[in-house]
Length: 169
Image (cartoon, rainbow, N blue to C red; front, top):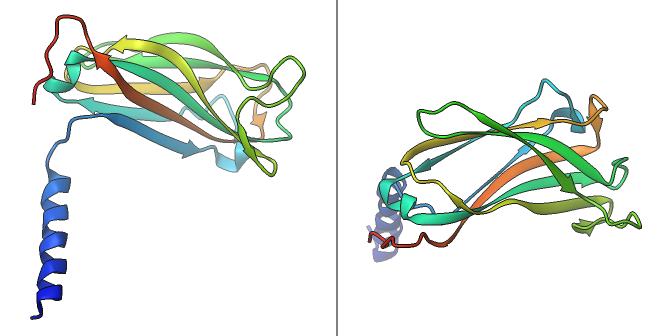
């Protein structure tokens, strides 16, 4: 076997081993497609994020990602975001996500007739228990189904250490 082939095999084995090891969370991001680009009340996307004990020393910024067509008929979207802490009950919170300014211009980045938004819903959140956090999104607009919503997603990123905490290597 040539050195090149050995290098490829070794790199592949390292990737397999590394993918089996739990990793500290720096950023979590996942986007899910809305079936038929029509978001019904019954469709409730779920995002699960697992934090290791060393992840609990940090503060986190939480965002909702929305991708929609230019033909989306509203300047905002209301969601009920339910957060379930490890071994806890879901805590629902109704949030408004602005998608356009007062003149009707989309706030997100656009390409052709598709716009993407990353909207902060919580800054410096405390996620202080190790385990799996479950976030459920429900569209909470008057129209059902809600047309021209293509994807919805969750992004969580570290915002720094909590006060009086030390990073665990």
